[in-house]
Structure formats: C-alpha cells, structure tokens
Amino acid sequence: MDKETITTKETKEKKSISYRFGIALLIIAVLCWLTVAITPFTPFSLTVKASIVTGSLIIGEILFWIGALLVGKEVVSKYKRYLNPKNWWKKGE
Image: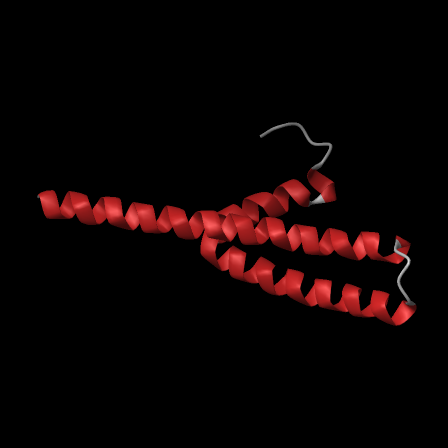
C-alpha cells in the first residue's frame, strides 16, 4: 500500500511540473503575440520588423500548442471561453 501512495504522489508531482511548464509556455506565447502588436512602433527597418513579426507569430503558435498539450483540453477550453468576446458581457454561470 505504501508503494501505491508513493507512485500516486510521484505522478501528481510529475503532472504538476508538466502542468506548470505548460502554463509557462502559454504565458510566453501570449508575450510573443504582444510583441507583434508592439513591433510596428519600434525604430527598426521594415525588413527587420517583418522578420520579428513573422518569427514571433510562428514561435507563439508553436509554444501555445505545446503548452496546450501539456495543460490539457479542459484548461484550454476554459480560457478560450474567457477570451471569447461574445462571453465578455454575460453574467457568471
């Protein structure tokens, strides 16, 4: 019985580490998307701005999907509901 308890704790710890890593990747992905909004106001040349925007979008999407796989479907669908503009003015469920 002690071995079962230990393995359950180990899997919870491993899950929480991957969950936290997934959340961190989602936050970094949002920061990459914010970079796209800020880049046009920088003093760089047009080619550098285009490269930054393209790279940020690609990296942001990759990080988002990896993070989504790590945190799970339920968490991603929950945050998608929060970010949907149709649900912004509705009362709480």
